[in-house]
Amino acid sequence: MADNRRLLLLSTSTVFGSGYLEYAGPELRDFLHGVGRVLFVPFALHDHEANARKVHARFGSLGYEVESLHAAGDMQRAIRDAEVIFIGGGNTFRLLKALYDFDLIDVIRARVGEGMPYMGSSAGSNVAAPTIRTTNDMPIAEPPSFEALALVPFQINPHYLDPEPGSTHMGETREERIVQFHEENETPVIGLREGAMLRIENGSCELRGIKGARLFRRGAQPVELLPGSRVDLL
Amino acid sequence: MADNRRLLLLSTSTVFGSGYLEYAGPELRDFLHGVGRVLFVPFALHDHEANARKVHARFGSLGYEVESLHAAGDMQRAIRDAEVIFIGGGNTFRLLKALYDFDLIDVIRARVGEGMPYMGSSAGSNVAAPTIRTTNDMPIAEPPSFEALALVPFQINPHYLDPEPGSTHMGETREERIVQFHEENETPVIGLREGAMLRIENGSCELRGIKGARLFRRGAQPVELLPGSRVDLL
Image (cartoon, rainbow over all chains, first blue to last red; front, side, top):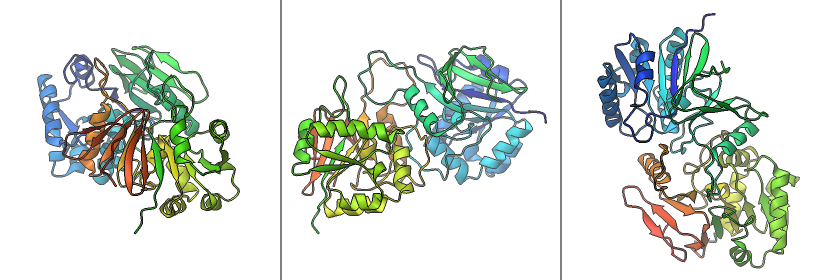
């Protein structure tokens, strides 16, 4: 069966010292080639209006129209009609709860399977994975399940952070948390540093952007990946 | 009705540069006055045996016997017979799932209501709250609910971290995460810095230890608390 999936999964919307999605402009244009209008999913942040305005401004500056899902009369239909969907960052638990509350899981999954391009950033990348079990977010809201969109067969850890030399903090490092994940789960995890992103199309997954990633498989040493690498995870 | 609760809730088991529970020795002795044997709950870490050995060594050096719950034939009975219970740190989601899996929520709650002293550290402090919605941990395991022991009527954020000056990381600060919690929830949150702890007895809650805390109420400015403060949260 043909693999029609097209995804762009960003670690973060913003890197230090630049504006919202500023660093990602060339990647967005390349990925969105031929698209006129972006359907934005604002539910990871509390203030949907403010979230949508920010996205509208940024995508407008790149020449795209933006519709925000919170303002759609019929959300399911808006997704069925969308050219491309962009799920933005914020809190992953709140986002996933909204996807369940509005019954959007199946329709998004079906549309991505048909080839509708999917862009996610941070929480929007977390929910593209089989589960949200590798989010960094605080569980401020309780979704009915940790199972997510499962658009890819691996877990994503966005905002991946290397251990800080000389830290006196006793909480777990990010790598220690992912090792704990693998005490309980089998699925590989890719830790995307801020500025890194994955582009999935034609049945292939490539690491892109301005930073590298770290790939964790259960029982194996972590592997460093540089932008431009093909990632053997599909 | 008399409030028989006695709790000691630690932010962390270990502060930088010293051994397991070393900094907390005088507080433990004071809290455990008259106790001979501690029932330890090791489920927040994957390796229960290694976890129990560490606790055995530390409490042994202070003159207490330790029984670990994972080795008890009848866990409910072990809790009913316990002089004091200590729930150690690790991953809060894994810990809470185990408390549900082994059907321990009600029996612990009942015993603490009767006056059995409760000690928690990190994840063990998180589960003393009404929910685990203010844990810092990665959701590596899925408990049937985020509702926890509700031994106190407020939320705890252990390992509380102040924003790092000059950080270039774009993930949320701890304070931003707690503000997000209050976008979705009403319950007050106390952020305990590593080395801080709460002691609850005689219907009163006192901040103790070697570091302060930060108290967050919905819609109000956060308040700084110093060790020795009475905390108006019960």
